[in-house]
Length: 203
Image 1 (cartoon, rainbow, N blue to C red):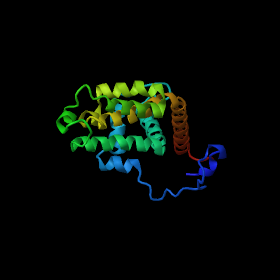
Image 2 (image 1 turned 180 degrees about the vertical axis):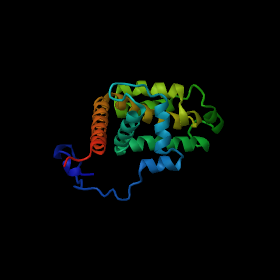
Image 3 (image 1 turned 45 degrees about the horizontal axis):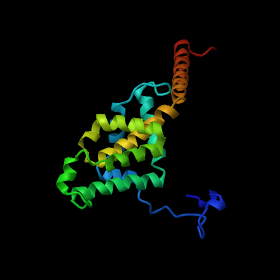
Image 4 (image 1 turned 60 degrees about the vertical axis):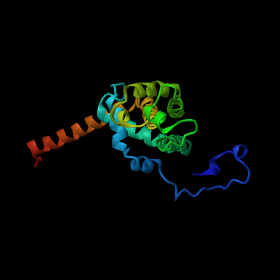
C-alpha cells in the first residue's frame, strides 16, 4: 500500500511513505477457514444470476463476479467490516453478546436487526444503493450456503455477494462483447487451420 500516493493535506501527521503488508492476513483465508471458499461464494451468487447485457452467459457472469469480488476484498476497510460481522457471529454462538443470550441469538428473532444493518452496510460500501437492492434479494431467498449460515454470517455474506453482484451487472457491460470477439477470433483461427489441412500447401 503506497501512502505516498495520498495527497499531503489528507495525510495524518507522522505517516510513513510505505506500509509493510507482508504479514497481513487475507480475508479469503479467514473465509476459507470458516468453510466459505471462493467457489462456494460464486455458486451462491450464480443461483440468482439473471442474464444481463455484458453478462449474457453464466460463464461470463462467473468471471466478472470473481473479478468484482477480488476487487472489493482488496479494500482493507471492507475486510475489517466483514471481519467484525464474523466476530459477532462467534460471540453470539458463545452467548457473549451484550444484552443477548445464546438462546435468543440462535433463534434469530425478528427484533434482531443489527445483522441486517451490517449486511446493508457491506453491500452499500461495495456498490452504493444498488448494492442494497441485491443484498435484499440474496437475504430473502438465501441461495446456496446462505441458508446454512448463522444470524450474522448470512447477512455478511449476502452483503458481500449482493454488492459484488450489483457491480457485476453494472460494470460488466463490456465483457460480453470482449467474450464474443474472442470466440470469433478462435473460430477464425480454427477455420484457417482446417482450410490448410484440407487444401494442403501450394507448390
